[in-house]
Image (cartoon, rainbow, N blue to C red; front, side, top):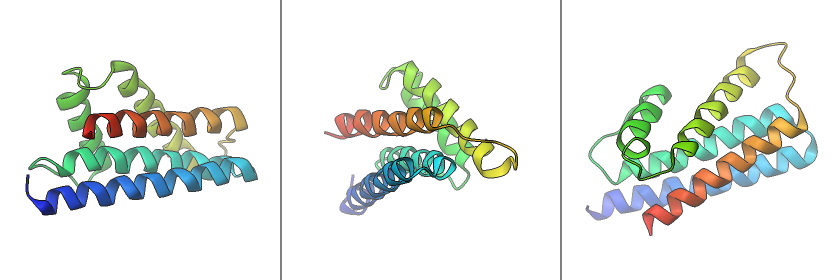
Length: 128
């Protein structure tokens, strides 16, 4: 791994941390759809940090997540529960962003922020 990959990994993890902070603020302030959106992106940036260490990267979200699940979750580098929670987070983010009549609850938003925090923590453990 060269310095560019390490720098990109660090940058993406910082983006993940910053975005999780925004998700927590949205949750606290009652913006539940936005909390779900930001929680998803916090998790997504953390996953992209892992991918920065390799030779592969993707533009489409579904490709990033599919590759992560195939290469990291199915090989048990990360727990299968993490893959399931990531799928739920992605699904709820899509509902909150694209379904005009989706009403995000405080409880669902809090669960998704916790999922993003879990993913971020597991990835930080993996990186160290």
